[in-house]
Amino acid sequence: MKLHIQNETARLRAVILGTAESIGPTPKLEDTYDPKSAEHIKAGTYPLEADMITEMEAVAEVLKKYDVKVYRPEVIKDYNQIFARDISFVIDDKFVRANILPDRDREIDAIEHVWSQIPEDNRITLPEECHVEGGDVMPWNDFIFIGTYSGEDYSDYITARTNMDAVIAIQELFPHKTVKSFELRKSNTEPKDNALHLDCCFQPIGKDKAIIHKNGFLVESEYEWLVNFFGKENVFEITKDEMYNMNSNIFSISEDVIISERNFIRLNTWLRDNGFTVEEVPYAEIAKQEGLLRCSTMPLIRD
Image (cartoon, rainbow, N blue to C red; front, side, top):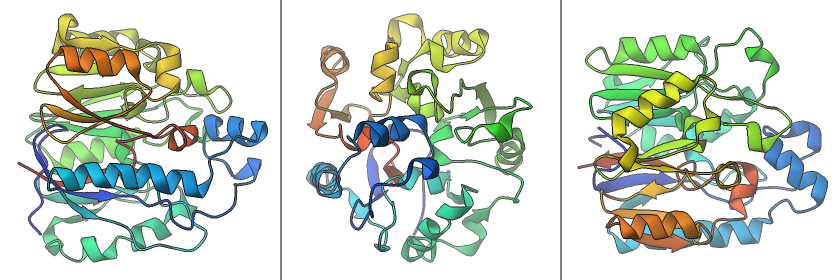
């Protein structure tokens, strides 16, 4: 397989889409990875497997409509495999295995049928001290944007997923690109004050536009750098509630076609007003786990 990913929006040709099959019982509160899942477990509103399968199949249908080759993980019994983006990412022709939470290692084994198709020189496993998840890593042509948290209390946050060791390692892997890191706001207890990954508060779309939430960034000047980079007139600012509902976590099939959640009324209207074709899907149940469309897709080949 000849991988090719330069950015977030070029025409998609092949992708890994996670699966909600055999997701297992509702997790115990102490086993949750994020405050939003914990909130829904406490409220008795944690999503059901059948509903999440229906939502993911709606995405698979849209990808099929646009002739995208879709790979799915092998199903592991009673195991959450929805968020394919967490466990790996592609930049240029390199497939990078993410060092994620140790009890999620089996997710990597479930995509061995993809990994094995990639030339060995292009399979990258980062050193153990490099913590990174794909939701924090965004190739954007000559840049790689990376969400991180470098506070001394990093280890206290289950929501801190990408560290500076990983940022440095990725810069060394791709010396021809400019790696730009952004400190994200983290909270173990308040989902509206937690940017689990960079794509929970920011995402480039089209050729020159972006969705962004200011409060997701810990350092205001880093947020301002992004706004200036894209131009204020090209940026769609989302509210705290819209960030909580994952409005920045949509997914681009091309520079002018976007898969979005059907309840994102304000965003979807803005997208259409700006010339995008919006393919609406139901994804509100999966959103309860603090992940959405970008989190559950891992692009392999774009034009």
